[in-house]
Length: 528
Image (cartoon, rainbow, N blue to C red):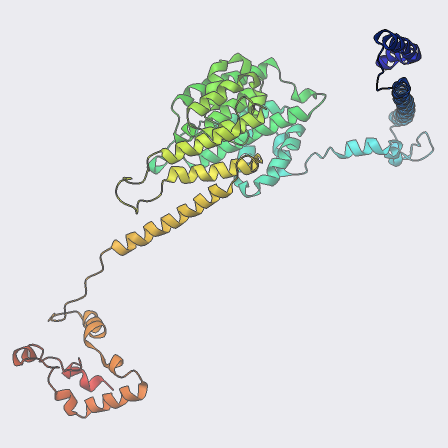
């Protein structure tokens, strides 16, 4: 608007400038003594048109300014009216609540004075004491209705501060874990000290630390640790949602000291991590970091050490929220760089998106480098030079699946299409099928039993007859032909006495135990 006001004097001085220009043009024409093709009338009309257009534009800007000021004034008036209405409603609600509260206290005082017959004592409005709850408004009822002392076994255990029973109940009902996870914050809120309750449950985190056969951890121990982690996450969620913070959710110095002691006991155990920690999925490290975040003691530990531990849980879905709770936002570029140097590009890209660091760590070049590195790596299953039927590299297969999932989650299809990756994935499936067929074809066939065996168990003789010697069913495929053939055998047909097909006498005597049709002579009577 200041620019419009400053332009006004220039617009007003336009006629004077045109007059001066006319004089200068006349003097030029006199001094030069030449005839100009361009007439002064044309120049004058041009400048007048230019002046009119400027004034029109100036008037439009003035109109827009006035419209904007009018709308702003109307909006301010509307906000002031709404604010006044809200204040009036709040004041009326407070006055009504105060009146009913005073009436309720008066009724209670009268009931205390006349304790001999409290049921017949009238209230301030003449009704009986049984209608005392009607003195409170709907808002009071709704708030009071939220307090349900024993609505579930979970809430009862929390109210009783039974940490061991709480762990046992959750472990026994892990099939309903989704429902339990929703109930835990409200149940913890109902306890007298949620932090003390959760600290009590953490005592069993390493109590059963033993190894099952084959080096696997006990399933009961894993269940208890997952439950402890879920309790700490629920407590942190409850603390974040409570504003203002209630008295039972205040972290006292005593609670911090207990949490610090437990963390000091857990930290040395993390030095001997299993394969889950090296792959970024360590439950123990996650629980340790969640302990620091929930009880607000992360600043009392070495920040470099915490950042190094972050790489042990980088694959977990809660990693971004955990880093925020630990106040590690300013350290995330270093954490992402560590992940990239370790070849864990997908986890680094996820953290870059979570902390708005995609300009410093562009995802598409990182994904391309990740896929290129996976494709160039040597095959894990077998020697790559053993032939064309080598089993495809499992590392590249996993990299393709992870890259496709990352692209779809962060909507990068426009920069990096997934169609070539999916075709490559399908090719892997075909290669695996080819390798499997080639392995089955190279497998040696089982040996057929020898025809001249003399001693066999009964089941072996029958198998040999069916598989090698007996050919009646093939020569006579129809039922009536087989029946005619069997009758000939029973009545001593010459067919049964015929020699073997074209065998020499010696070979005929060698196979004298069988007829030319492959039947035993001593079995002829049992053909029927």
